[in-house]
Every structure is written in structure tokens, then in C-alpha cells.
Amino acid sequence: MSESAADVVICGGGVLGAGLAYELAERGARPLLIESRAIASGASGKAAGLLSPASDARAVGPLGSLWRASLARHHELAEELVGLGAPGYGFEESPSLLIAADVAEARTLRQAAPAQWLEPDEVRARCAWIDGPIEGGLLREASAAIDPAAFTQALIHASKARGARVEHGRVTGLSLNGRSIAGVQVDGRIVPANSVVLAMGPWTSAAGEWIGCRVPVTPLKGQILRLRLPPAQAETRFSDMDGNYMARKSDGLVYVGTTEERVGFDEAPTDAARRQILRQAGRFVSAVSQAEVVKQTACLRPLSPDGLPILGAAPGLSGAFIATGHGRAGLLLAPGSAAALAAHITGESPAVDLTPFDPARFG
Ligand SMILES: Cc1cc2nc3c(=O)[nH]c(=O)nc-3n(C[C@H](O)[C@H](O)[C@H](O)COP(=O)(O)OP(=O)(O)OC[C@H]3O[C@@H](n4cnc5c(N)ncnc54)[C@H](O)[C@@H]3O)c2cc1C
Image (cartoon, rainbow, N blue to C red; front, top):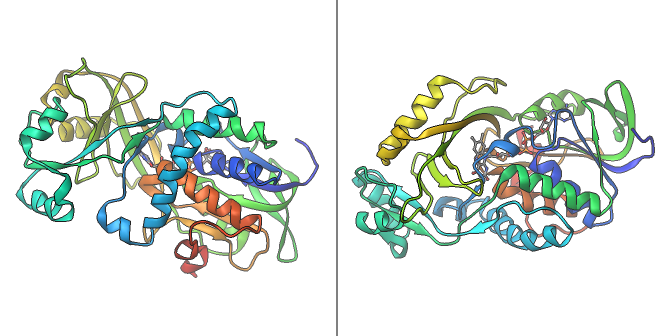
């Protein structure tokens, strides 16, 4: 590993770390990203990769502007990354459905967005998979999808084209000069650095000891089945109001999920989750019971106590920053988060107000 001081060392090669490497390199900083396993080996490689518009509650809450900025940045990146020679990552703009399973859900959705409401027959005309009882659904035009692993790799490719470096290694602590960052401990060595960003997904909690403040991010396990299903006449991807979904992805397989399991750092797929996912999806789509399960994946979402990202300067330490806590929407929120934090680190004014995401809010 090179001993020359990087401007910024990024710890973690998930979508947040990769996005930061790209946005920092774009701004002329010399980032060095360090990943202990493999790029996109966590949730950033195994997520569903659905980019849905913010629900009404989210659109007006503190996440709203970050959500909109991120979706807009996704559209820009779709051209920018390919222009830098990165391989495609299945970016696809197409509507999605949010379905109501019962009368109460239908009332909620109709009130929230009357213009987007579809009756059950209209929903089925757009998604022929659905043959179970539903009360209707919302058509969300501004939706998109990506292949998460390929997207993260594309960001890495483009950031290297802009001068970023990527190294394999396990970060175990920081090196401080008083209350300022001097370097990062990697596999028993010190890698000199002027700044550090802790973007290790749910594992970022361990860094609390290094920086002397709580990073209350916890793992929320989720599992997905990839099914082989014959093509249907119409296949608009859909989710239900419990956050379960079904979508054909760019590899031709239909992704069905998911679970929310509080089981620590266990990343192993389980039979119980497989049964649960098939049961959930089977309420709406009878064909899943006959489908071949080609692959089952499990990974960990980085969850913060208030459901908001933890994004900004670590309190009381000059040169240390945190980027985690994006929960169920990290693929969607990564481009806006990375652009805003990179701007903050390099002394620009971020396009999104980072105040609601300040790591200091946890004391
Ligand atoms: C089942 C499931 C489905 C999902 N679907 C969607 C979706 O459709 N849309 C969406 O927007 N989001 C989705 N998400 C959420 C999204 O995947 C996450 O929010 C996002 O990937 C988190 O990215 P990250 O970079 O913060 O963390 P991670 O992807 O976990 O990356 C952290 C990286 O840090 C590395 N690391 C850890 N410790 C160290 C260390 N000490 N030294 C060096 N490296 C280290 C890890 O190996 C890992 O590669 C889903 C999540 C799950 C579980």
C-alpha cells in the first residue's frame, strides 16, 4: 500500500464509499478507498436496486430534498459514468406500482395521491403477475431500477478514471494528531491521510470507539429470492405497503423480497426466510409457488435509530466524517448523499442541507 498521504481515506467499498470516491475525485481530491472484503460485498451488491419516488410523508420530511437530489443525480450518472468508460448497470426508468391489499390501505393511498390511483383491473392490466385479491394501487411514474453490484462497480471504475485509488485491507482504527486526523490503521499499518470518511455500512458502529462518539447504526437483515418466471404480458414491478416487492431485473430473473430481521451481523440465507418471502408474494401472485428459486441472498441494511442517514462531520474531531445509516434506501440515496458530503469535505456548499443528518444529533 502506498505511503503517500491521501487527501481523504474512505473506509468501506459499498455504494456510499464508491459514490464518495467518485464525487471526491470529481472535485479534485485524491481519495483512497479501503475495503476489507470485496467491493459491493455487503448490501450494496445484493439489494433489489429499486429506485422509487419518496412517499408523501418522506417527500415533505427531512429526507425529501435528499431523495429528490439523489434521483436527479442517478439520471445524470447514467450518462456520466458510461462516458467515463464504466460498464452499464441496467439503469432503467419505468413506472412501478404500490398496491393496496385491503380497503384501509386503499383509502390511505387514494387520499395520498388521487391522480395516481388505479382500480384493481387497471393494476392487473399493468402487472399480469397479480392474480390475488387487491383493492387497487398507485402508479408511480418517476421510478427506476439499477443492478446494485454493477452500479457500485461502475462508480469505482469512474472514480479510478478520475484518479481515485482502491486498496484491499481492514481498517482497525485511526491515527490522530491531537484532535485531528493523521491517518488510518489498516492491517497493523498506518496509512497517512488528511481526512477520513467512515462508510462501513452497519459495521460503522465499531468506529464509535475510534472517534470517541456513538455511531448508533445497527444491522437489519434482509433476504431476496431470485426466481425464474416465464414472461407475462405486462410486468410493471410492484411493492406492497409492507415494503415487499417483485421486479424483473436486468439479469432476466424476478427478484422477490424481503425480510426485516434483527439478528446481529448474521448474513446467512435461511429456509425460514425463503418460506416467508414465498408466502408474502403468494398472496398476490400464485405463480411464485411453481417458480424455480435460482438464488437466495441475504445482506444487512445499516439502520439508524431515527431512520435518517448519519451524514456529516464526526463531532469533536477535525477531518473525520461519517456516511451511513441509509437503511432500506441506500442505493437510491447514495448519489445525493455522496455529492453533498463530498462538497462539504472539499469546502463547497452542499446542494442538500445536511443539518438533519448531523452525526452529532445522537450526543
Ligand atoms: C434485502 C435488501 C434489499 C434492498 N433493496 C434496496 C433497494 O431496492 N433500493 C435501495 O435504495 N436500497 C436497498 N437496500 C438498502 C441498501 O442496500 C443499503 O442501504 C446500502 O447498500 C448501504 O450501503 P453502504 O455503502 O452504506 O453499506 P455496505 O453496502 O454494507 O458497504 C459497507 C462496506 O464496508 C466494508 N467494511 C466493513 N468494515 C470494514 C473495515 N473495518 N475496513 C474496511 N472495509 C470495511 C464492508 O465489507 C462493505 O463492503 C436493500 C437492502 C437489503 C438488505
